[in-house]
Length: 423
Image (tube, rainbow, N blue to C red; front, side, top):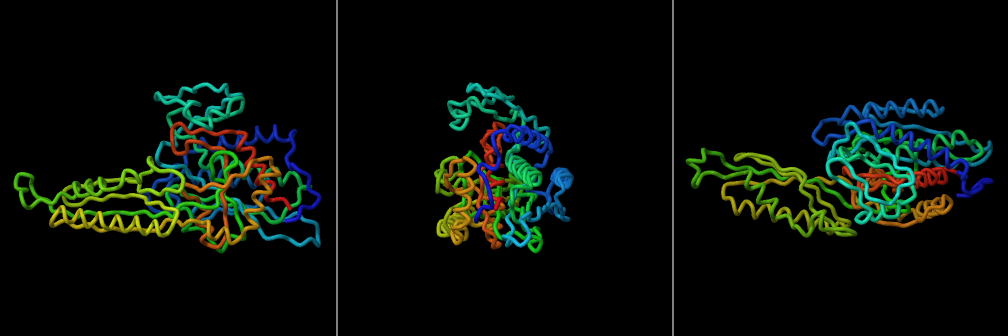
């Protein structure tokens, strides 16, 4: 896309100091809102705190003069119209997306973000005996002299994805207050329940105007992602036969033990803690039950469709083996796709990747393509025909009590949004 009288960088060094303060303020305010999603709750959203944050953001955007719409399922849409001169061809709408919820793995209630200016490079002591240690955290080892924000050890921080929200809102604020930066139509999309894998089923697709989007939901600075796992959720249900233990010989079929036996067959070398890069995994998420009925939930990940087929076939074999080991017991498997690898569809639009690399260069950021060992709402949008690469936000150790954020990278992410939006 050609630039119209644009100077680089769009956010100069004098403005960056104010931007840092604004970004930090926004991130801290958003992080303190408990938006933990609940994978076991019905409906969308799965937690009331997501409504609280959505309404806060709606008010904030409207105060900036930006039109918003909050749907009945807590999708917040905002639009900034083109400010191109009359007679100038208006480009297609570009979208930026982030999610409202935080993961349920660790508490997100009463988050206490700790700001460390000019980090001294030493170990940080957290609550509960946890530490942030640069000798074991490569990202932290390079953060000396910079500003970081970390959780206090009692909760997660919520950079996934409050950092993405802060970058988008701050970029929108900058654009509407700098009319000299010419841009086409911009759409902002904040979604609920991304962490449960239920973030987009209720999305009103007919309301989305964007023909391309960018997710702000990544990690370390300079990392951009156009590919992700294929993801399935699997529930195995075990049916046994209950009877008093004293009369159990030859009769009892212990469904809870069947579930445990199935779990023990999951390859330890193909677990999340044993894999990285392009290696997929099986991950046990929940197991419960009694003698008569038990269930087990797991997620399955692989970068290729053939690899996913192999993994589902292996689970079916495990189920048959459990039935053989527990005569009279039955196992049923329910495997459902959550999202698919977005690489193939994004690569059909090389101009989107080229534009992203150009924006990174103009913002002074490095550009490294890497696979997401997870997924984003961008993967689902890509399936719907809206190519959506992912952009870093500067977060580290997501979904944990040792989560932290490098503020310089958050600033860089905000700059990239401004660059992408500009014509």
